[in-house]
Length: 140
Ligand SMILES: [Zn+2]
Image (cartoon, rainbow, N blue to C red; front, side, top):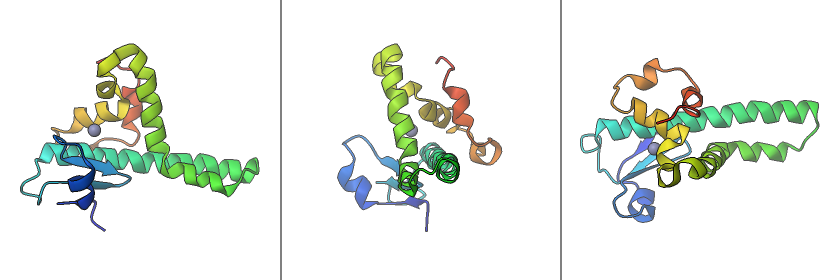
């Protein structure tokens, strides 16, 4: 299954005007018709978010797996892993809203990592996993 969905129904029908692309789970949905039309920096930015989503589902899945085995919690908690990226994203946005106001979105660690690497053609190849953690405390 392709990671980038060009001319996506989701992007065409659900995004607000002025927005071209959204990453949902590990897939990038875009209004761009094809690879040639989509700027590489947008592709880099959104693919970084897709990797972040994978990191969050894996890390939270391991933690929940340990809790299922050792603490006997219900396996239904695994469903939380699917949304962990969005939960952390929203929580960080709420916290940073207190410090940065309207600039909170730009200071979310997931956005800061994606912005920092979007002009680097080899960012995803050469960066480590969980790099977004380094951006939680850095001031912009
Ligand atoms: Zn972003």
